[in-house]
Amino acid sequence: MVIRVLAALGLGAVFALGQPPFDLWWLALIGLIALFILWPSDASPKAAAVTGWFFGVGYFTLSLHWILEPFQVDAAATGWMAPFALVGLAGGLALLWSAAFWGGRRLGSGPISIALCWTLMELARAYVLTGFPWGLVGYLWAPTPVAQWHAVIGPHGVTFATLVFAALAARAIVLRKWFAGAAALAFGAWFGGAWLMPPEQDLTERPVVRLVQPNAPQTQKWDPDYIPIFFDRQIDFTAQLPPPDLIVWPETSVPNLLQNADYALDVIADAAAGTPVVLGIQREEQGRYYNSLVRLDGDGVVSDIYDKHHLVPFGEYMPLAGIFAKFNILGLAARANAGYSPGSGPALVDLGVLGQALPLICYEAVFPQDAIGTQSRPSVLLQITNDAWFGTYAGPQQHLSQARLRAIEQGLPLIRVANTGISAVIDPAGRIIDAIALGRAGFIDVPVPDAIAPTPYSRTGDWGAVLVLLVAFAALIAAKRRAPH
View 1 (tube, rainbow, N blue to C red):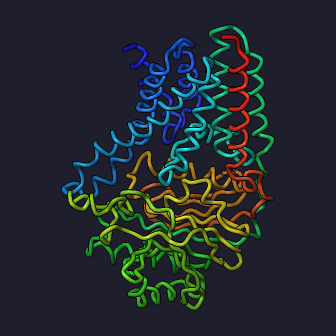
View 2: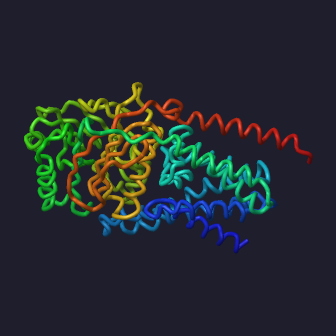
View 3: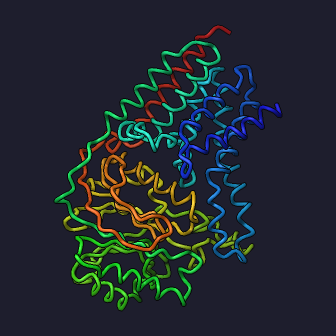
């Protein structure tokens, strides 16, 4: 049992190598197949749960190690929380995978039952307790053509197909059968994804957006000595000629609250010289604070305001804030007693020649369901973010990778502007048209691709995956009842 547990822990870490910045998807797939080989058909539900938990701990500890970074911004006050945050998050998320292995063993002895329960737990991870679908199982395919299936069956459909393939491959290796099924699934996923990939567009006549990346490290971002430096840097980038059709600044890029920012907004409008500007700013209304995106029109007037509605627990608001306050534990970005307040929900912002945009502020781009929340379809996805919180290695790269998947799922271009990077324009196939590297200050003018036809996933959301899971569960339960005892 000890050997199996240690093997599961190590294989979980191997599986994490499929995530950025490593992107070793093939090695991660080997680790996943090895897990299914490791799990014996005669294991008890308890033993299966232990195996699943240790695999999850190995995976989440390595893939989410960037969670240590926010606590080092003010290390004297919050540094002590960092190891507890990583251990608690990895161990807590691993409980869902443990439950999947327990439930899979209760349903049957085959690895397909685990694949089914595991997909259900990944779906739950996206929604329960506000959700945290970071690094879903199916995301290992992000650098490959298989990622195009997100447009058809969504992230949870890709996760289910991945787990079924790993289960079939493990059975093929152990029992020397089912090779054909595993090979057919792999062939269809890879070459089908290549066939699904939209062609590259001619961007010659497309509107141009300017991405402004000030590169303000979080330790300096709100320092009074550095605030003018970063603001002036953005002003300088904004004023460069020739003017684009739109200028975008990152999340919380203006150092004033909106109601106190008239002078700053006038300076921005003067630098933009008639070009609309989208920027991130904080605002206060009746004692509540909001993490907001605003659009300045060509005359410098605020014409649209969007308030972030999907907030980061313990980062932007504190669950049970009164209880945690007794222990002097406050949200990392809290300005008021309980941090930010959520906005009213998804909304569209008019970007003029670029059409209607669906804003996604930082964390919101992690959620596939948050990109489907408006009545009418947008022309573009617009993410502003401050990835300085995530450090300069894994976190920002994983965040960018997931933004690419949102573009694929919706068949929409995505404009992404990050404080410290990576800022990019992404086409509906997930291709990066151009980008500013991590940790650099600068700007780029990039033509924005056109949207393509609505994808199947953009029409159904996660309901398609839910239906498949329900049918599969019903079939599995019926087969178990028919089996001789």
